[in-house]
Length: 638
Image (cartoon, rainbow, N blue to C red; front, side):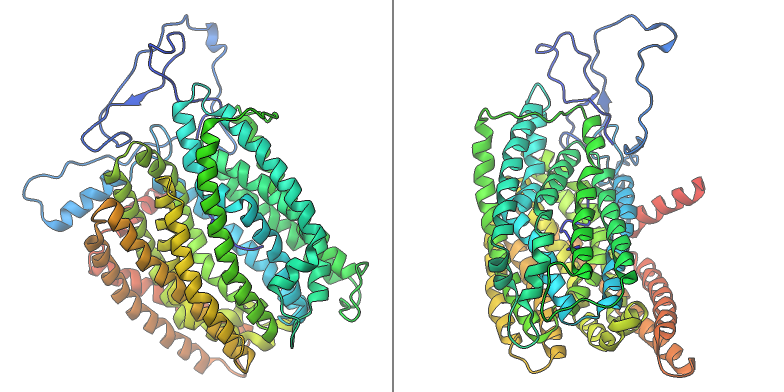
């Protein structure tokens, strides 16, 4: 599976409820509880008032009452109480108070940000682990050479085409659009959703058919036939894998609709089902006698068919598992072809998003061709997936939980709330991602030795470990850049993210072409990994400048203080983790193997992270307080 900036990440809602109109517009319908606009804007956990509903006779013996929601829907939670700062409070006390004010529910009666992001984090963690597991299992079976390179190219194609067709729109632009429709439409945006569904299904169907027909041309764009490349094998895989485009589209569209209604569990858990199907597929592959034949390539090869069909069935399962949750929302799919004037607005956003995806694909093409020519593309994807693991569990989860309310704030023109959400998201990402990044830098080789020191992949452990060490600094810049992009989308601005991507691609493409001419696969691998991480540092800086010009001061001083303290603590803890790994290696007998790697990774990570968070506590990093409080509450309940 190819990662999704999406995240991994995205997390209830009572089925059938919709935003209601004022009593003058709907005198016979019970109105939901609304918050009175306070000094900090709608949606803040300020005092609320109850809008009276029309009186109806109570049903006898509780008949007709809706049973408590179960299954996918998260249980309602109370907001973290807001505390009013008192005059004369010092800065640390004011910061602590601010945490209780900003971390409010996504909307009244819905889970708090930490509750929602925590639920997603569990699902995303399992998703990332199982996704990485099947990639590791595949490396054990076929190594990280030409077979894995060819499969990786072909498996990336459905995602690339899907993103170009409609995927970038669904995962970035559509949630704010759906939130606005739900606010303004009497039917909660159902007709608007049905029009989008109808149009999307047609676009996805046509795009899938054309992609399968042009499979060889697509492979040529991403795979080099020079040196260690094998376009014929990649094309054979592509014929089996390209039908995933349609089901990726269905999955992403349903996911976006659910997220706009603040139902996050099904989209978060669906990739887990996908990964389990693929793990089972690789298990079947391992039991097949012999190995895949690459000269000549045969479409009837049992190994090729098993991987191609099995991996595609995983994406089918990912789409189907979300449909019951969509049905519970009250939305029914039916063809609706009438034009909605807001589709024109959506189309304008979509054109910029298509341009964004197309430009990003140019960067991916350059890197893919460089990697496949040197036989390093599968190794690069393993490094990138390792770097995405902490982002997918933490950064993507926070971003997905915060996006609906950020979109609501942007729709209300409340820039202060938008800035508050952006600042909080960035600071929470910093205090959680930087420590992990430091540990990955210190323990790159032990981590890869523990995971890949088996079977055919053992020979490339050192290369992958070095590339991970050199590029781990890119985890936080990637998370911040993605958060900034979502702010622009929440403000119905798809143009600026596209321009940011242009500048990042202008940086990435020529350097990738140069990297492809380096002498060894190790040099190509390390160069591509570093180029990718640096490109997100560049995107972060550019996004900061443009957001300042749009919103004014972004509370960057507060973020830089948190970042500086966290960086100092992470450096100390990372150094300690490296020393622990050296000590373990010194006392372990014989040559280093997977056992040594696991000992180094577990001991080094545990001691390093404890040291980092201990130093952060001593440095009074206030963003730790809400997270620690939430964890303490969970432990008490257990």
